[in-house]
Image (tube, rainbow, N blue to C red; front, top):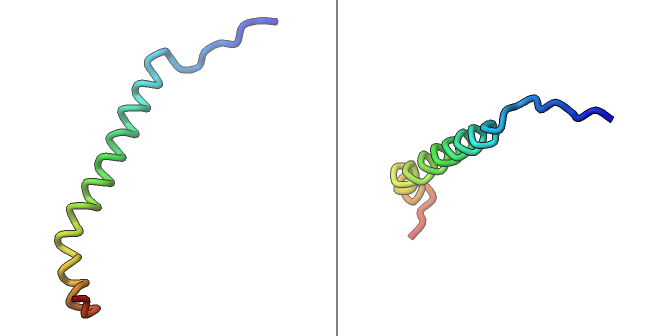
Length: 49
């Protein structure tokens, strides 16, 4: 039974880790910083005290 060739190099998992970490960082950073802009308008719109 021949050994299966590795399609991706040994550094590929690190690229994926960095890429997914960057995507996660950007999505959470934009979500939580936009709350400061959106939340006061929501409070006024829905008459929350």
